[in-house]
Every structure is written in structure tokens, then in C-alpha cells.
Length: 205
Image (cartoon, rainbow, N blue to C red; front, top):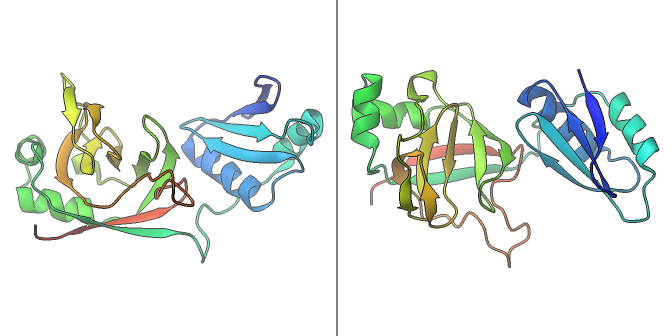
């Protein structure tokens, strides 16, 4: 069930049943945006459709959104990012203990899938990556850390992700990468945009 709601003067909020539906609609509108649409912001169950200040008719855009058919999330030219990781995170041993795996098995299972960025949030450049092995799906820490270093690779719930800068956080830390996830001077600034494919690769320090 889709609902299209006004969102301020220059946007529409599309409510959808799940993330798969969000990504399918996002891909369709990204590839063939209705006239006047200037940005699309996916989240777990919503898609924000941002309109130009004077170039879009909200009623026509809403009709186009309702008529859109989901598109494949990734096409032949879809962006892919390789993330080299030193797996020495503070929580690696605890994750192994909680899952009944060895630390090496945790690393193998974390590196095995090809992930896709479902949506961004929390911090600029923080992508929520889908595709985590079910054995590695653990709740957040009971007490978040006051400071998580930039580049920390972590898991929480159904997701894995990389902290783009130092911040508080409650995800379980598996390792770290030197990749710069967000750079305001870069185009595009965020390395992990929605629908980007991601592979993690274990490296020595």
C-alpha cells in the first residue's frame, strides 16, 4: 500500500510497506524522474520526493509517483565500492562469542556478501548496508560508546555500516577502514549512496 503525502511546500513523502518497495520506487524515479523533481531521499519505509521551488506541479508529480513501476535496484553500470578492512574491532571477540563462531568465521561471513546501500542517515555519508549474514545480526550495544572512531566498520540489527567520522554510537565494531566515506569537496560527497553495491575485503594492517 502506497501513500503519497504533502511534505512542506516543496516535497512529497511517499509511505511504502518495506525497504524493497522503497528501493524499487527510488530506482524507477531516479532513472526517469517526473518533471520538477530535484532530489530523492530513501529511508526504511519512506521516499522523500523533493520538488523544485517553482518548476513542479505536486499533483502531477504525485500521479507520476503512483503510476511508477518498481525498477531493478542495480543495473549493469551501478556503482560498486570495495572497502578494505583491518578486522581488529573492539567487539569482534564478543560478536564471535555471541554468535558461536570463531573470529575468523565472523570475518569470513562479513566479507562474503555483496551488500547494497539501502538508505543513508545518522551522519552524512553513513550508509545502511543490506545483506548481512543472519548469524551476524545482533542488537546494538546496551550502552552506546561516547566516541566511535571514523572508519569503524560495525554491525547492528539487520545492517552493517561504516562510521564516516568520529561520533557516539552503539553498533558493534568489527574493524576499521581508511576509506574517506564523506568529503564535502568531492562530487558526489558521499561514497556510499543509496543502491551502491559494496564488498568488504579483509586486509593486514
